[in-house]
Length: 300
Image 1 (cartoon, rainbow, N blue to C red):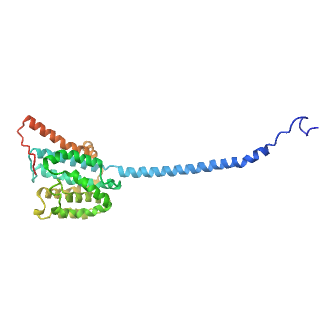
Image 2 (image 1 turned 90 degrees about the vertical axis):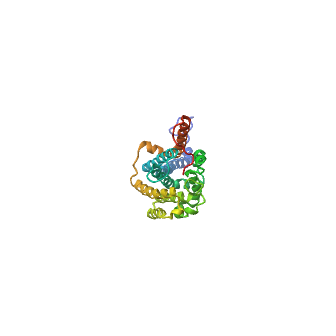
Image 3 (image 1 turned 180 degrees about the horizontal axis):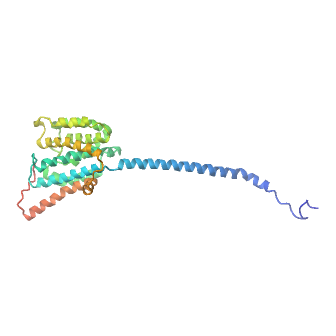
């Protein structure tokens, strides 16, 4: 007789318990791994997401523009353009002339350069290719007619100094007192000692320092002996103080903007170069049309 419960001649089925039991630990381990692994994966993803959000937030904070400063940079470019047109028309840099008022453009431009200089310094670059290219293009015309290099060359020379010194660059603000001994006085349109002091003031504002000491230095520059400071530069020193006050106020009212002016400010290097070539084109038209306008090639 066969075993109870089975037909004669049939084989008893294999016990499932014996075949499944060896696989149980592996199956259990797989399920545990799947659950724990998914939890860990989710934790990693959350941490990565938080990190990415932090990076994006910091990047936006660094890359975010200040409307009022774009506006001021646009104003500085318009004043430069007006100054170069006045230059072509033979107007000298004297009080109560338009070129006296346009002296505001250089300190504004230099202080704004200093304010955003920390962005370039943090990249550890000693040279900015876009800045160098703009300087080359602008000086094809500027140096030809003035025998001096424009302010962009001053910026190119300042960048490696700032990259080495980093935040300590602000301590160069008193360099303006070396103005009369500056070897670049007759080589650059704006001597490097003057531009360094203006840029240092801008960086001081960016780093959140007290601007009062900077204002004292800028004001004291106004009282230099007249023989140590050429007239046009003494005018610039006067407007340096005004520019510093404007910069401080612009930080309080960051939403000041005018679309066209802000567009100029956002693309400052491009429009800086163009504002040299536009007067040059006008000069060519004046000469071709033989208009009765006195156009000096060298005028200081």
